[in-house]
Length: 256
Image (cartoon, rainbow, N blue to C red):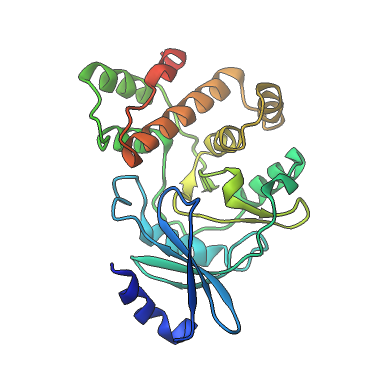
């Protein structure tokens, strides 16, 4: 959708007197800062390749509604299939969120959210297989077969919880005392072990810290190594959909 058409749709919320500036660090979508005489917003224009990247916009809307009252949630001012308008959160260096205790507390808070039973889940293996079929540079049949075998060896838990699935410093604002988690595009009912692996991978925690967190969550070593490997593979395949580069599938050597 054309940017000026979106601004016309937003006129009842932001009004006609609005200053616009582009936010350059967004990877998936085009994002803009909107400033009016009384309010500041972030406008996200959804990537037309959203479905190829495994994003379900209807699910995202339902999750944003489910977390709206939580202190870690962004404040949504408006949403459609084509855009998301959120209240501006004063940016603070993500380095202020330094404590693994703060990160795991936030992770636990996300996993504790009550969500509708009708929400479609996002299992890591479903996402991997979806992404593998939408690469800008198609994978060769041998790699696809190895990916399929790796996915067949995964057993999801019986109980799924709300997972964010996109933990990285750019999606965390605030401080240890009051973090705000943004970008809920990939959030869904999922495997808490995979979400912990997403946190460790995205926040670039060292192996010792990651292994310690896995033990705190009573994850056996084999299950944790599988969770980390599948998460890294999912990340590589995502980049292969978003950008014209072949994914590094060497991580399959760990899974095989």
